Amino acid sequence: MSQLFARRGVCRWLFLGHNALSVLTRPLFLTVCLSLPAATTYAVEPVDAAVALPSPPRFSAAVTQSYDWDHWNVVGSIREHRVQGYESLLEIARDYGLGYHEIVRANPDLDPFLPGAGVKALIPTARVLPVVPFDQGIVINLAEKRLYYFHRQNEKRLVVSFPVGIGTTDANTPTGDFTITTKLVNPSWTVPPSIREKRPYLPAVIPPGPENPMGSHALQLSRSSYFIHGTHRPWSIGRRATHGCVRMYPEDIPILFAMTPPNTPVRIVHQAIKIGWREGAIYIEVHHDKMDDHDGRRWHDYRAEAEKILQEKGLEQKIDEQKLAEAIRRGQGMAVPIGQMKQKPNPGE
Image (cartoon, rainbow, N blue to C red; front, side, top):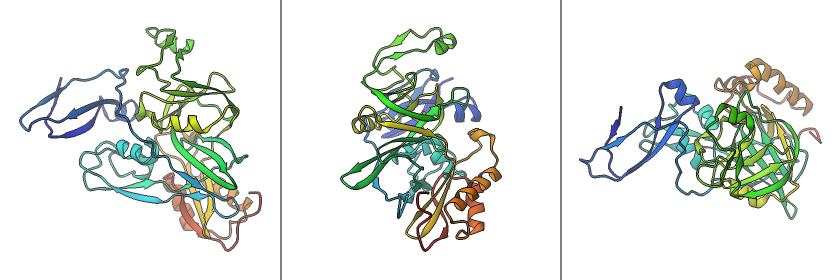
């Protein structure tokens, strides 16, 4: 049955689904630009979940930031955004370079699709950097569904990060060390046999174009069946949505592609707890939520992991126990202060 909408001069994303669960796990998206007279009514027909509709060209929201392991490994800050009209959290997330789970975890009391005009949404852009083994390379933290590219400019250490979509629970993105072996522009997608078994209507190869799920650019990893690539379904970013590859917003993948040469090291990790410091403050960042499996761990497991890391860094006596417990309980996926220190943590930690 058609749904009728009448709007004046508003371009909206409409989210269609059979029930609340299907909306969260398998949303259908339809771009409808309404620039119609007040008396005009526009009929919107339901769309097939397999249909991917193009989004308008946009600029990446990624920001390059400096860091210094000896003095600070927390970058960015928590901000607020006042919702305008019919904005959804998904649209706001993309505007700020965030993924789905990042924005939803930070705003658990807001409806992801209709938060409400005038409501303030937290923008979780304060982050503790993941532990890395190099000054130049890519780290993908599956727990936060975010990719970090660490590099140097002269003597300055820099990092830029992007939200990503990762493998589903039955097709996990593998952890470990890899390198970028091949860089592809406008790649074709060779459909794996396992996917063709489930979707026999798919051709053996999907050529470049708007129907290609690899998007405009792809970075092949040394485990050759895995890629970091773009997507034609941007609303899947920040979710478990792939067959094991790592996908990025269409506006982000060209930037990473241009920055990373062949043989760039890639480390894929699962760091659910990150401890950081900046200007004498100790921070924690915790990633868990009911919409993800997070390895079946309960919040008290995160407490034990946090205490272990704090002890290794010699910070266990410098934190506020109540703030620590609250940060772990909430698991909002952003850097929050939990204590103070007068000197830097143990060297090499």
